[in-house]
Amino acid sequence: MRAALAAVIAVMVAVLLASAQELAVYRVVVEVETKSDWTRVAVEGFFASSYRVVEGIGAPDLRVDALGSEVAVNKRQYDTTLVVVRVEGWLAFTGDSVKVTVAKGDLEYTTVRVYAVVDGREVLVWNFTNSGVVPGSGGLNPRSAQLPRSALAAASPRTVKVLERATPKLVLAFYYPWYGNPQGPSRRWFHWDRVSYASIGTSTDYPLLGPYDSWDPRVVRSHILMAKAAGIDGFVCSWWGVGMFEDEAFARMLDVAASEGFNLTIYYEPIRGEREPPASQVVEELSYVLRKYSSHSAFLKIEGKPVVFVYAVEAYGRKPSFWADALAKVKNSTGIDAVFIADTFNTAYLGAFDGLHTYNPIWIRDHAAVYAEEAKLVKTYVQTGAAESYRKLWAATVNPGYDDRKIRSPGAHVPREGGAYYKRTWEAALSSEPDMILICTWNEWHEGTEIEPSREYGFDYLKITKEYAARYKGVEPPTPPPPTIAVSLSGNESSLELVLENRGAGPAVITSIELVNASPGFPLEPEGYRAYRLPINSSAYAVILPYLAPGERVRIRCVPTGATVAAKATAWSALGEVSSASLKVGEVAGRGAARPHPPEGGGPPLALIASGAAAAILGAAVAAWIAARRRGRSGGGQPT
Image (cartoon, rainbow, N blue to C red; front, side, top):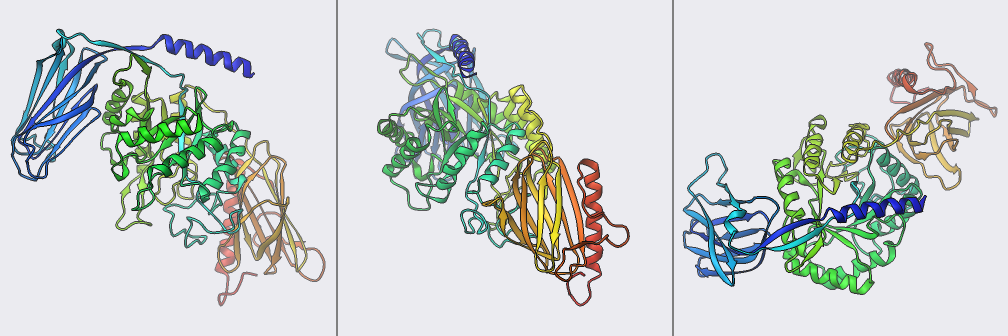
């Protein structure tokens, strides 16, 4: 199998290399002249190497930037001092023309001139002026024009061969391994706050898996199986430093991922509050990750090279040179040639990184237009002076919505629109023909960007993901077989045993039990199994079990707190197929075993195994019965 796979990959590489793209690259000078108080000039296919201010150096509050394909000039508001900036660089053509876009303030004008370097001389070949106001543009006043390749006919271009990478179409999801629960392996609350059965104080929505523990391998397995069923190939895991909570979680996740044929990598978080971590710390941390984890079979790789995503590369004013130096030191320190993908749309950072993405695209108004433009800029980027190089990678991000109002004031809210917003971002991403699609996020519950199943949305967003991932990759993941859950209760007045068994062909990724008039206790069997319990009210508990394999049985010790004990179990497959079972045990008395007690009014029988439509009917009947019993309480006492 491995030999066959290697042969297939070798053929793919050969085909891709044979289809390398050749770009005509011209040495040019872009001159920006402006009297407006600010201007932005974007030249498609342009890569700035240096710039100088030739006029207006004394303009009040003058700030000039020439990075990647954009030249920016800013001055004090309403200032009309003439400023002229000349930027040297290279201009690459993939077609017959490139687009030049000029935005500016409401005042005065901006003129762009392009000079071709011909036999060492600068020859003016094109110019464009934007003056006045563009109605309805919100003060941005953008105007565009096409710079034809024919304008540079007198110049001799340099041909650069851009080699394709053997990059499979990947769907990855940003993942947060930072949740802790005292009932889980971490033995503490972490990132969950003010937890009750009804709500979680720091979570926009409520996980169907409950307030879980990221160190729990069964939680991780459930997440991975759900992700795979939806067509997701891997998680990009938020990582905050050596020995931190997320580092320990990541170490625990790798073997689980390997056993399921799933990929993991880190999302390097370089922002650590107001104090900027020194460059030496960045080098040390990235080197640690590559040395410790990148050789693991589950660590994400492209062409055998480990892949690392880096968040907010422009934070603290870090320039491309900062990252070029840091990543060179990481390579020298580890001897590992890694692929680094940066969180920015500034193509100047492609001098240091292998690709670009944005983490959360809610700031974009027109995703399709922005993604199309950015994809072209990334894919046509050429390294200055290189005769050939590998094409840079473009990763497009999709997002279901956003709501951080529980953790920030006033916060921000982008409505989900019943899934329509998520679908629009997917359509935009697909139209840009990306190397990867990134989902923001699997489980960032604080900001409400999760697609992980929740009480509010169920499995809706996994089903949407499956549909679009299949369109992107041209292959649909297999539908997982469903679980079939069985539940039984036995015992006496002082102790009950609740037994859950999966008799189906597929795993239960989530199993939720509602237990009335009994308090769930420990130990559990099999030994080491983690169950997460929450009181629903004074007489009822919820118990959540992550991952129940086919044929697996879990026993939970319970203490009766009333004469009639009822239990309802609901289990979900990896794509949300439901199996339910319920029972009621009454007249817990004396030292003998609990005897069956049929519910009043012809309720559900003692023990059932059900799935599909029958499960839904059964669940509704049990819920109605429990509600009727609760309404019959007197004086706030427990139901009998």
